[in-house]
Image (cartoon, rainbow, N blue to C red; front, top):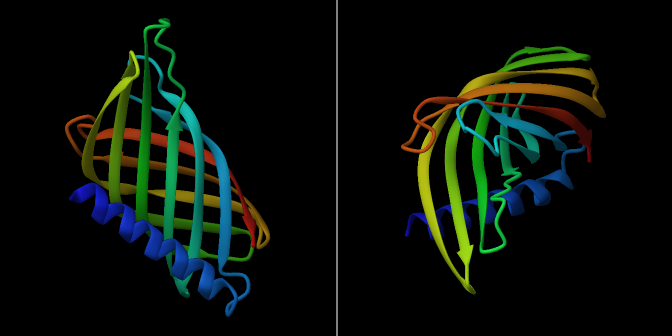
Amino acid sequence: MKKTAFILLSVILFAGVVAQAQNRSGNLHIGAGVGYHTEFEKDNTGVVLEGTYSVLNRLRLSPGILYYFTDTGSDLYDITFIDLNANVHLLLINRERMRLYGLAGYNNFRMRVSYDNDSTTENESGINLGGGLEFGRRNLMLFGEAKVTTGDVHDNNIILHGGIRFKI
């Protein structure tokens, strides 16, 4: 039930962002980069895909996904780790070339183990708290973000990621 609700909420949120982007130019940014989970013993780096959408002058919505690179060293099974996030950014400093923001949001960690044409999936929900910094111009921003994520798998661990955001 949680999985279905999260997917439905994500689809509605993304559809709303895309629809509103037509009416408010400059409010939608799409980003990509690299991420790092500080507490995984291995397989702790991955790629980040995310977006930000300005709802108010100092408030943004930011859905995103972090896919971790995994290597089991075995041909018998495969493991996939994915973090799905729905965050809200509060812009503390909002200047032309720099933004500093706090963030809070929802996290869903998914682990999938595939073996012999079968697979099992585990999901865990948690809360994100953290902040980030952006530098650049309005249409191209470099960013870095650090957040603490709660939950059994994360157990209040720090996730770092950074990259580039483009204005759509």
